[in-house]
Length: 311
Ligand code: APR
Image 1 (tube, rainbow, N blue to C red):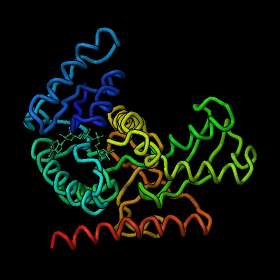
Image 2: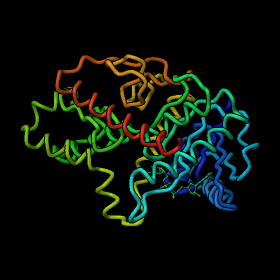
Image 3: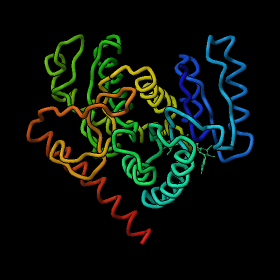
Image 4: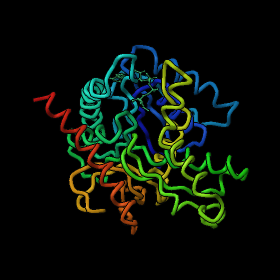
């Protein structure tokens, strides 16, 4: 049976994600935005490209959640991007309100869906979607590590002048300045990265990965990255609707795994038809584990700040 996927937010990330899903024919798509005409217009444009791009033409745009009913997966990309003068906490508070409202609507019409969150600040928004949806933690997952690892893979491929498909990279932790790239577990065609590059080159790649999003924001000036986040979210959708059981780093609510309890943070998971089918617990070195813990603490502080604002 064909799956249905709702993509909420027809902005840069949502539209890119929807078109990637359409181009691969992963599912029928309902693209939804609060702005009248925006999702309808983009969906119509994408459907008209289908014949040329060999894509799925079953894509509709709407402002009406009733049309999302029965979705297997809902991708949340709705939100605002950071404006000049806006603090991280202001952004978090605005997007928290949007994600709260959107999650309630999604669940009303697709009570058994799997939610893939993309809106930033990512880990905190996964917390909110989890709380508002009432879904088990296996069905609410955030897109962070797929993108951060893809950035790291690209930087490694560029440095070594090799095909990016042969590069494997892993980034754990929160989707922000405290993320934890793990060079020890990166490889190229099976060869450990640490045998291919000197420590200073690896450290430069780690730093560029951590600041990968900011680098793009500083170039674009009025927006943030969207091709890679949109495609990364579509990859997670494919893993779910095609039951591919991919091992991907995703933001999930931990309950003791990695010694972290009650916090959403990025770790490798097995992603399939049931959502997070397994949390893969890697053995980390002391310094990697400490960095992951620090990253989880940063997520926890942001959630506390959000809760304090709400109270
Ligand atoms: N319901 C539905 N759509 C909404 C709502 C809402 N309550 N509030 C905002 N939107 C829509 C906007 O109308 C807009 O079309 O969300 C869309 C956001 O699109 P962009 O502004 O283009 O932002 P984008 O670059 O897509 O980023 C979206 O993803 O990667 C993250 O940090 C990024 O949090 C941001 C999100």
